[in-house]
Length: 224
Image (cartoon, rainbow, N blue to C red; front, top):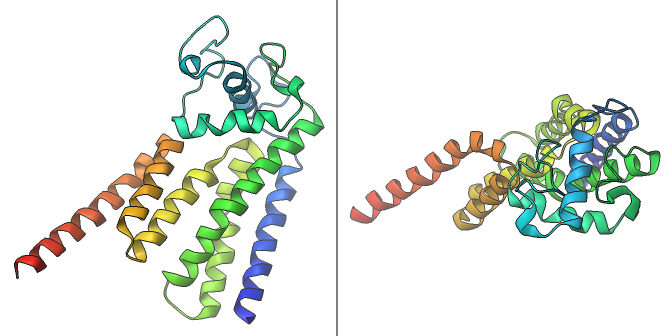
């Protein structure tokens, strides 16, 4: 019970650090004509909410790919219309909302990143630290704190503005599940992470080598 109380405090520290950074400005604010990655995420909501699926990745009169064209895999795109439905329609009005900036919209966008952390990334970090890492419980709690306070991810997702915690969280879920011996579910988690952001290709080699090595090991054991 004491360990989980300490973990809760670590999570609270992590959330506080994230929200503190999110209160500041973001990359591209008041800098036309592109307005930065924050505008890219908003624009993807605009495109996916207003246009049919077959137009999302193609240059059309309503979808200028030179202006933050959707260049992430489909798992990034599919949740965007759902997010757009939760907010003020003026924030995603086709064409007219380009470059939209307001405090209310910023608060909403920051909150979506925080919710993604709570649902995907943070649980994976806690489970990884306690079930797959070695050492005392005190060391495992410290591992949770260090990972959650990693400045690189916080500054990029909550300062610059992106959703890296989703793809990284899904990949970490893959590691956790593979570590528990559930190879199919672990593979599925990594495939989801790759279909959310193509940068996860960098992590594909360790997954491939681990699973291939396990296949060889089980095959040799079967022959013996």
